[in-house]
Amino acid sequence: MVKLDEIKISKAIIETYSRKLIDYLDIDVAIVGAGPAGMCCAYYLARRGRKVAIFERKLSVGGGMWGGGIMFNEIVVQDEAKKILDEFDVKTTLYEKGYYMADSVESVSTICSKAVKSGAKIFNLLSAEDVMIRKDRIAGLVLNWTAVEIANLHVDPITMAAKYIVDATGHAAEVVRIAEKKSGIKLKTKTGKLVGEGSMWAQVAEETIVGNSREVCPGLYTCGMCSNAVFGGPRMGPIFGGMLLAGKKVAGDIEAKLSKK
Image 1: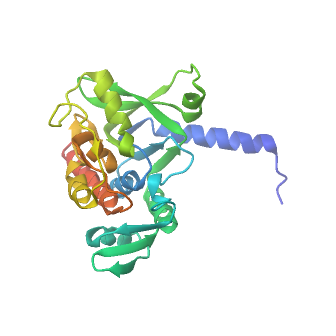
Image 2: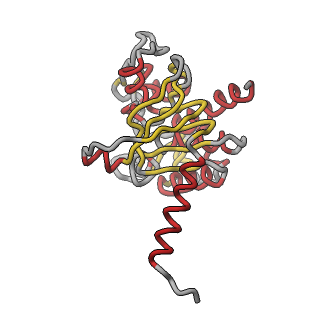
Image 3: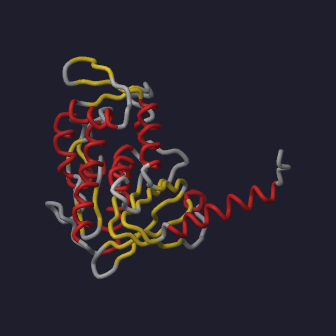
């Protein structure tokens, strides 16, 4: 048995992580937010051979899916979204026509595993505090440790580049808010600005969220609940089909553009 050395363990972690981070400072697609929409988007892009990274400010991935509804770890999806869970080999059960149940813990852990095994990299505890703009286009992210943000420390960030950025930060729409506030770029919304999220209406939210998951300004896409916050639409509550469908849709849109280059 190898005699374990604490210094070698430390060196292994620092060297391996540093190489990984350096390798992902210039990529095809950077996704902010490792909720179901972001991870689903990463999965479909990575399996096409695209270099994809997700930057998640929290320690854990999964966004709001872990808690299901009111911390009951069951989620609801509709017929079309069930096909994605079937593809991921997540078990679903029929509640009644049009309503399928899935265990939220199984769903999150499986989607995460599928995304990573497809080639996507997830960097947790990193926050996007700004965007990089080149010629009126969002061209990258400015990153810092979440701990720096929480402690309100004056520590300068680093920058990474991507052909496309995806805001999958949910209700907060963090990246779009930054772009709107600091870039002067007019958004592709009815007001030219972030419209805001409406009150819960599951039917309308699920109908609009996939369509609203699209390019909001050059180089920047919205995905998942972020999309209704940006373009104006209600929240959907603890039904997660729209999240999965939005991730797949945005991945397809970006893949089509990358294929033309």
